[in-house]
Image (cartoon, rainbow, N blue to C red; front, side, top):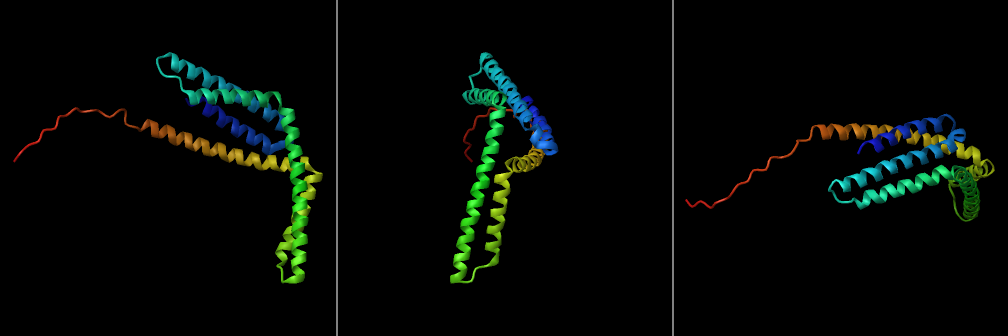
Length: 193
């Protein structure tokens, strides 16, 4: 079943591009579209699984579970896109605070060890940079989130390109696969010389 895979690749490329253009503006839209796409893929997977079992096949429990997960996650992202966005900003704020305290602890340690033994300046510089980045992320979580969305957009576009290459390779391999091996029945007899 390639339709859900093709839909996801198209979604990845489109969303990656939108996030790269203006992540902050398109983030909530992205969550809703992602939710709807997961719902569509869940319905397609569920219907194909149920139809396959009705045509004499066995019910594929892993595919049934996958379709239920797709429907649940798709429903969540469609309904709670605003909540997800605020959680991301809150997480970014917490990460900024943690980075700031982490940098301060390292700086205190490096300065303490500097009195006892020779400490490389790179550790002190890294601590100061961590403190500065932590403060920037903590006081501007939306700006940091926007940068994260741009990076994520680039990664999603790369992922979509790799998925297209994988899909083409898979289709090529299927096309050139031998149809079915012919089974020849034979009977072996011991021959004495």
